Length: 92
Ligand SMILES: [Zn+2]
Image (cartoon, rainbow, N blue to C red; front, side):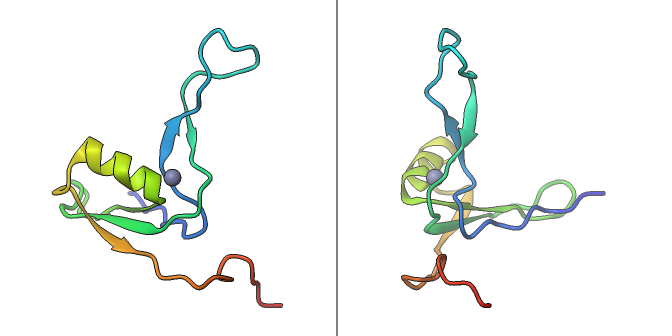
């Protein structure tokens, strides 16, 4: 049993090195979630063993890293259409 996490259109879903090392006080080595506004939606071309196709949102920078890491054949990348005030405006 599994359910896919829906793509987050307001925040890039990539994780990247957070810049801390083991010697950084208060820091935690590892990766942290990117905070950029995503511009791309990556959708896997092949379904996972459970038959579900994963997708995640990516900003421009993370898209470049993503393509370098997994190659262009792994996923379909589509532009996220948004207007200028898309993320700021909320319906009352
Ligand atoms: Zn990103």
